[in-house]
Image 1 (cartoon, one colour):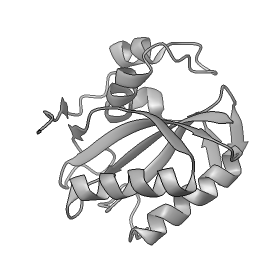
Image 2 (image 1 turned 45 degrees about the vertical axis):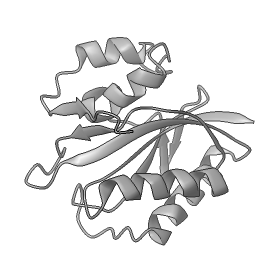
Image 3 (image 1 turned 120 degrees about the vertical axis):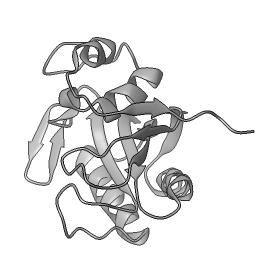
Image 4 (image 1 turned 90 degrees about the horizontal axis):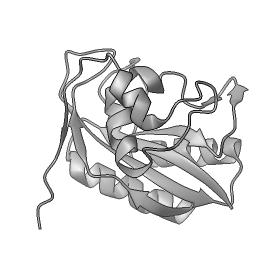
Length: 163
C-alpha cells in the first residue's frame, strides 16, 4: 500500500456536498482515507474574482501507483460534473495529488509533489493540520515550515464543525 496526500475543493453549488461526494468516491475508487483535515474556506487563487472555495486535505492509503491514482482522480472529477473550460476558474470539485510517498514525479499529466504547494496557503493550511511534519521531498522543508514561510496573502479560515 502507498500513502498519498490529496487536496479536495470546490466553489460551485453545494460545496459541502461536493466535498462529501469526493470523499465517498475516493474511498470507493482510490483508497482508504486515513485522515481528513477540517474544512477550510479559502479565497480563490490564480483567478480571484470568484466565490471562495471550501478545501480539505486527505491522507490516503492506496494500492494504486501515482499515475493510476491520477487517472482515478480525474474520473471522479468528471463523474461529479467537473468541466475544465477556464484555468483557475470556478469548479464543482477539484482533486489534487499533493504528495505520493516521498516520490518526485515529473510526467506530462502528473507532477508530484504538487509544483505550487509551497505558494498556496489554501493547500498548506489544511495539510499542516493532518501532516505538519511531512517533509517536502524537493524543498526538504516540513509542511509546518512551508506554511510559516508562505507569502500567499489569500484568506484561509477553518470552518467550525457543526454537530
